[in-house]
Amino acid sequence: MTHLPPYGTMGYMVRKILLTILWFPLTFVLLLVNLALLRSLYVEQSQAQAADSSPVVSKYITAAAGTAQILGDSVIAGDARALLLASFLEQHGSPMAPFAELLVKEADTNGLDFRMVVAIAMCESNLGKRMPKKDEFNAWGIAVYTGQNQGKAFDSWPHAITWVSQYIKTKYYDRGITDLKKIGAIWAPPSVEAGYSWTNCVENFQGNIL
Image (cartoon, rainbow, N blue to C red):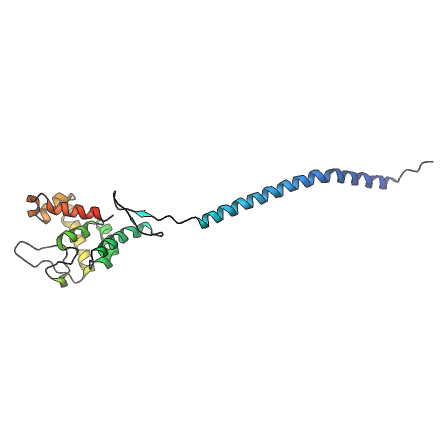
């Protein structure tokens, strides 16, 4: 008489066979999932390393169209104009070079082109190097008339820069006089007959501060 295995033994064998059958597809699926995760991690690490090792691109800061100066790798917009002015003033040995940030600040406060006060000083006194009196800080020919060698006196360069910036705003801009030819006709009347030489000079040096 044939003896059949007890029911419990039969069930155990069936479960064992099922586990054996399912083992291979489950292992394959898990392997694919692991490979996908590893690939994702590898791509992320590669991108991070590429970002860290990529060369820093120098920023070209320009005030207007024209030749640009490379001002460095970490220049922020707020600093660019001050750096441009400082570079220009230092190149010409101007005593105003330490006050480039103040020049930009006062230009913004009074709604002026940030290069204007510097360009006028260049045309009037070679950026403060040729003034009637060195200790009066008047680099703009303010109140200096034909036949006189005296003009507006200031206590310091910050005082002069602040006053002149406000003066341009109140005397010209607030009256709607913003065109350099019209400003030049009032600032330096004889220059009109000389083909607007004052205006041409100011425009030329504004264009050089790039």
